[in-house]
Image 1 (cartoon, rainbow, N blue to C red):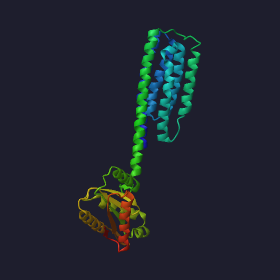
Image 2: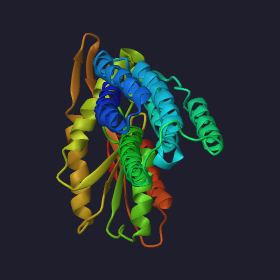
Image 3: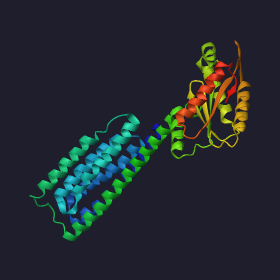
Image 4: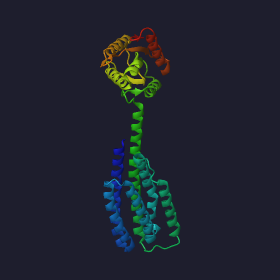
Length: 345
């Protein structure tokens, strides 16, 4: 999930919250007007104006400004409403919803700008005011009397509202936290140059297959480019990277169903899992070696030719993954010792 996507998600979800709060305050205006609570009618007009302006702030990218001001507005509005109509209507419960919005904002603020949004401090402030209202209103009568059935319905509607907004913000937060982690896992599992698995990811895959007992008939081919160090030293790492990318293109085009990994440097590993004929694997690897041998780069200093030595190992029952791959590695180095550019079984 890139930075633009984070900004887009944060802004769009904030717009939904903004419109929701705007509609709520419109409804509250008529609610307080019907109850004759004039101070709250005036405060709701200010709040409605704030959320209308807030929509344009969000379009202008001022996400943090909107969050801070809306948090302050909700605090003032909730405290004022509770003092006016009392605890029975449940207005004070909105203060306990706000930490979800604050930490939601902090998540995206850290993702986008690597900055905290003071979610903990803001949440503690809301808790202090909630406790203050609970204590204060037990010894003070509300400024306006609200019929019991009206207070009951108001409280139920607020519970549904708080629950719905909490679900929306937590769902969005969970979804994009998961997508971020998934993207990071995928990025760490793949070699950036070749697009193959790295050795650790392939080892995890092989260990999992071993646990499921699905390695019967599997084979591994450890491939090392001959004299590749000289290419890097003579032509530079940029040319060396081009050679590795060309090699990976050749490895990717296989007649067999395989998994490929960059084992490190100029070393690659190919694993297949359905070997019905060992000779078929040997023939395929010899053809692969010949295709690698056909790679060439014309340079001013001369032609670069690619050659590779391949060591093959077939999985045997009771082998560990490391024993199996170590056998392929030993055969690879036996081929290196005996002249290179060959396939050793």
